Image 1 (spheres, one colour):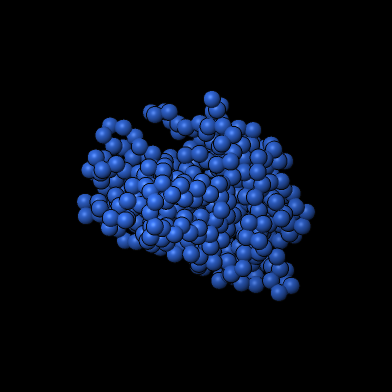
Image 2: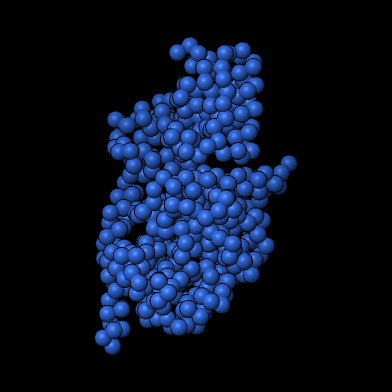
Amino acid sequence: MAEAVSKVGIISCSGEEIPEGTIARQAVRRVLEGLRPQQTVTLCLPLFLAGEVGERRFASEHPTITVDGCDKLCARRGTEKYSGAVSASLVVTDILGGPARGCHRSTRNADTADEQAVWLVAERVAAEVDHLSAQGTPAETKEGSAPSGARCSCGGPSPDGKLAMNGKSVTINGLPMIFQHLQKKGLQPGNGGADTLLKTVRVYHPVEPHEEAAYRDALVAAYRTFCQRGSNGQGAGAPTHGS
Amino acid sequence: MLIQVLGTGCKRCKTLHEIVTKAVQETRVDAQVEKVEDIQKIMAFEILMTPALAINGEVKAAGRVPNIEEIKRMISTAKAA
Amino acid sequence: MDNNGQKPELLVIPCSGIGKVHGLISREAVYQVTDKVLPGQADTACLALLVTGDAETRQKVQETPCVTLDGCPKLCAYKNVELSGGKIAKGIRVYDVMKRHRGANFGSATALSEPGWAVVEELAGEVAQVVKNEATA
């Protein structure tokens, strides 16, 4: 039986000087928020120096993937120097086959080129998460217990894609990302959006015919909460290493 | 029938392609199975994650690898439509 | 990184914290300064290069007045510039500015909303004020 391992850690360089740094950051966000939210955790690289001993234990507590924008490899070198050996080192320019042509540093200017670059890097990172996870079963939070390492000093727990349904909890991979996508398309919270919610979610998560009514109700309630949380200034966060 | 497997070449994409190919053989449906690996073409389907499965242009599953029975049901439903 | 070979008058360095919207606001505020408000006068530097002790970047922060923008009380940008021997003209705490707009939806750590971009512009204005103050000092 596979041993339980901790979540896979991902550290981005988030380099500010070049678009590849932004791509690294956005791709890691995509993996944490949408592609593998239950299996991953992150930490801000500068916390290795600005933070405390707990932060520097990151690479020893999690099999760690570093994602760097360029061959200066700051995330990898910083992690190795202050925290421990990395399990995988990914570089945006390697994944894209060269510099990120047509991409931008600021998300305000992001267009199709940026979206495609982020997608490609995120998929590569997610595949690496799967590879590391296959070497052991990622530990999942027990029902009712506090999420492990899921709080950062900015406050608040991270959304976890769990749906409360008929007294039990169902995990839907990428649920926050699905909700964000629908919100962006203009779907309003309420019973009027129930069919759209169900139709969209069942692409990503199997729903048996006899479960449709329960899923429909649960999704309407969850989407309403999601929209309210956004309007209360509680933006979606990413699972971060707790202090 | 056109069945498209969308993905940039990761392990799960390959697994999905294998299962789809097997499902087509076992259901004996007249279908063309196509791998779509170009990122621009994948994003045109407006999916949020890969691998994904589309039948006659409509996305049936994404971000997961359905088992062969589920894929066979999707094929049967699409054939009947 | 120099603009047209000219040394910048100011280095603006964000924390770019990846966990919450505050980190993205700090990052975007820096781009607003370098690209729109003070093009040619202000530049940025990768905080990650300071973490690894890159000699060229350390020299830059030691020779050029710096403004740091931090999204949370961990003060990663401020502390890393300070540890690198940098001269900090001002340390801006993004969360203090955000408190003035309590209840607003700023977006997420991946994408900002309109109120989020409004805070970005407000922060850029604060940075521009530092340059004005330095010039009149």
